Length: 92
Image (cartoon, rainbow, N blue to C red; front, side, top):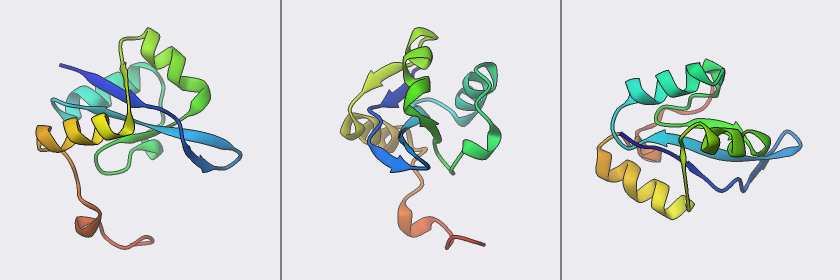
């Protein structure tokens, strides 16, 4: 069981954002997020988007900080990755 968070580098809404994933199961990811009061609306098919100011707290709670490349590699290896081409268009 491992929860991973990458370096915040995606700008939106006046801050940088990171991704929070599990390399084991979505149930594990949802439980971790709920315990840390990350809103369900932050979930995007295979990850949660989390603002930069939450990353240190998530690491203190047990998430492992990794590069975005490592996060993606481990998410793919877990079988949980939802590829961009498999995502429905925005607004549907």
